Image (cartoon, rainbow, N blue to C red; front, side, top):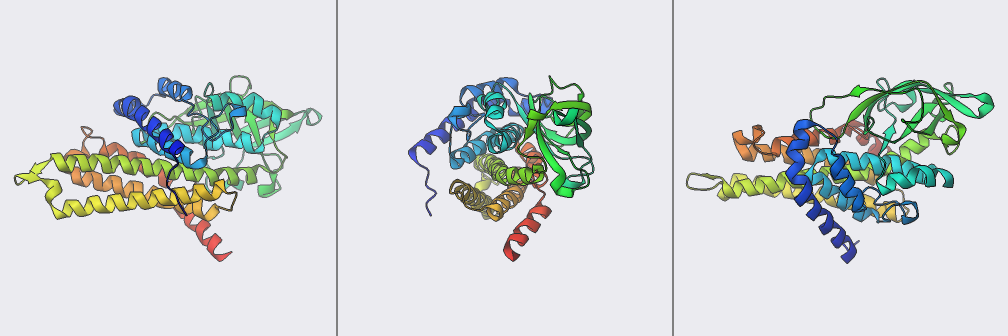
Length: 382
C-alpha cells in the first residue's frame, strides 16, 4: 500500500496550494466577516479546472483521480473552510449525483456547466424534521399530467449553496407510503421552475461564505425528464453520494487541522516568554507533536478511503472512519491552536478562532459523528 503522490498529483497539489496562499488566505478573514459568497474566487477556481475536479473531461470536468481531488480540497479548506464546503457540496454532492445517476441528456445539459464552473450546484436532502432520519422527509413529488410531470410541495433546510445554486438536486417522496423505497431524486432549476423559493439563509457559527439556505416548494412543476434514474431509488442515490462525499469532508477536516497546526507552529516560534520562544517549552512541543500526529493520521485515513473508491471496492466503513476521525481531529487541533496562542487565540486578531468555528461543522453535516459510529459498527457486525 503506497500513498506516495505521483508527479501529477504533486503538481496539482502545488498548483492549488499556490492559488490558496496567494488568493484565498488573504481573503479568508474578510469572507468570514462579511459572510458573502466569494464569486470571484469561485470564478478563478473554475478557470483552474477546480469546480469539476473528478468529473470526466467529456462532461466539462478535469478528470482527476480521487486522491488528487482530496488533496486539492484539503488545500482549499486550509485557506477557507467556507470555500471548502462550497466546492465539496458542488462537486461531491450535486455533480456526482448527476454523473452517477443521470442519463446522457441530463449529463450534457446539467452536469457540464456545473463541472465547468459556469454554474453552481446544491444538494437538497435535509428537512427540519428529517436530518439523519431521511425517510421522515415531508417533501412530496406527485405525478401529474399522466406522468409527464411532477408537482413538488414541501421544504428543505441546511442546504449548502442553496440560495446561489443554478441546479439543485432534490429528494422528494413519490410514494409517501413506501418508506425509503418511495423517495426519488430530481434536477431542479431555480430560475426556471416556478414555485421554487429561498426562504432565507442561516446565521452560522462558522463556515462563512457558503450560504446555508432554507428552501420552499409551492406547487413546483417539474417535467418528467428531470427525474434522476428510476422512481423510488432516491434513498439509495443519497446514501451512495454521501458515502463518497464523506471523503471530501475528511479532506476539509484535514485542511483545517493543517491550517491550525501551521499557525500554532509559527506563533510558538515567534512568541517569547521567560526570554525564549514558547516552542522551547516541552508542554508546547508535546501539543505540536500531537497536533501533527493526529493530522497525519486523518490524512492517511482519507487517502485509504479514496484509494478503495478508486479501485471500485466497498468503502462505506473507510469513508465513515475517515470523516469521523478527521472531523474530530480538526476540532481538537484547532482547540489546541487556540490554547497555544493563549489570550490572543480567543480574539479575531489571529485566525485560529475561525479554524475552531469552521471545524465544528465537520462533526455535524454529511453524517453526524454519532451516525458515523453506527455506520462503522454496522459494517463491523455485518
